[in-house]
Every structure is written in structure tokens, then in C-alpha cells.
Length: 269
Image 1 (cartoon, one colour):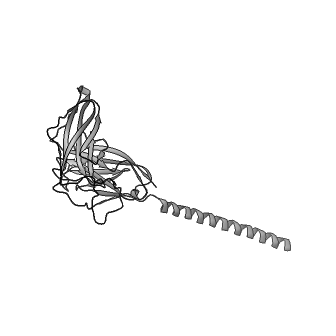
Image 2 (tube, helix red, strand yellow; image 1 turned 135 degrees about the horizontal axis):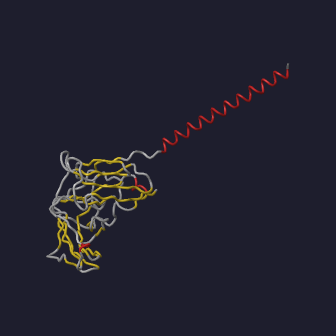
Image 3 (cartoon, rainbow, N blue to C red; image 1 turned 120 degrees about the vertical axis):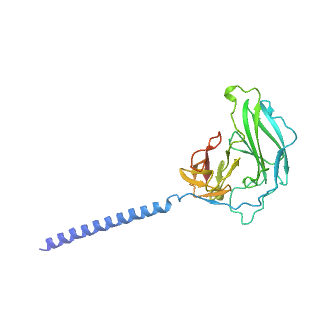
């Protein structure tokens, strides 16, 4: 009789321990799931950013009647800047923690809608291959937001050498154009928390019932109907893809060689 009681007790003990282990496993699984939810990348968002001084009277011009027929290799452009000081920091109240150039305000020069180069003096030297090219230059704040007024930029078609038919560009300078500016390159540390989204429009503007810009960030789409800077938040560390596209009131792509562009940037801790 005692043996039966002891055996029953042992079986009950084993069953109790087994139930406890199963309960612990379920709890651990539940904890892991909860941790995964917590560790998931938060949803990406973009928010309008109130710019600093609008610099409405700032202007950018090419000095004199510079030739746009260039030789292959390096060419220097001499810019005339008025009512805007290159090399100084842009003053702004409640400046968010975003990437900023310690060299100050500058000129963004974009060739064929490729990533811009930043220049902190009036003379800008660029290297060109033979062919036809389109140059956009505009004034930029120290934190890389473009100055947006009718005189703050210029667009030129450049002829380098003697282009063959495959090196010529058919660009209508009366048409509507979108040029990509920011974000660009690699962001590290606190600069990864908020990243500036900025672009430049030529011969068009944005509105509720007119043209818009579709921004696709890692596949997540945003519709932009006002031309101003934006801050992107929530992007994960590592590679991120940014695509901008100019569309009309019916969300149809606006024709043009630069109106759809995709770039990749990197975020590092």
C-alpha cells in the first residue's frame, strides 16, 4: 500500500514539474514575442519643417556672359551671389538636431540630377565628360535646405566637346522639372534621428489640386502637396531607399528626364 502511495506521489510530482516547465516555456515565448514587438522598427514618418529666413531677395547668377560650350575636363563657373552670405551658419530658432555643415551656407550644384556637390565660394570647378549636360545650381542653407525663390537658382544646358547623337540630351527648359537634393550619403549618431528631405522644382509648384511629389521611403509612400522642407523620422539603421516622383493632379507621372529619381542612403549608430 505504501509503495502505491509513493508511486502515485512520484507520478504527481513529475506531472506538476512538467506543467510548470510548459508554463515557463509559454511565458518565455510570450516574453520573446513582446520583445520582438518592442524591438520592431517604428513606422517611418515625414513632417513639415519650418525653415529659417526665407531669403526672398537672395539671388544667384553666372558672372558675365559665360560660355556654355565647354572643353572636356575641368571647367570653372564664376557665380555672382547677392543678399546671401556664403560660409556663414544659417540662424534658426529651435533648430532640430539634423545634419549641418560647419563650413556654413553654400551653393548646391547638380549635374544631370546626380548627387549634388557643395561649394562654399563663388568659383565652382567641375569636371565634365564629352556630351550634353544639364546643370542646376541653387543657394543652400548650412543645413542643406535649398533657398526657394525665383532668383535663387539657375539652370543651364552645357555642351562639352563635340557630342555624338548618343551624348545629346533632349530637355525642354519650359517644362516642369523635379531635382533631388536631400537626403544624401551617410548619417551617423544623432543625425540619424531626423533626416532632411528636400528637393528643387523648376517651372512648377505643388498644391492640393495640382502637381504633387510622391515620396517612397523604403516602400512606404507619402504624398507631398507643398514645396517646403520635411523631416524624415523612423528610418532603420543601415541602407534606406528614397524615391521621389513628380505627378499631376491625377497622380500620373509628369514627363521629364529628372522627374523620377531613386537614391540610397546609409544610417549608422
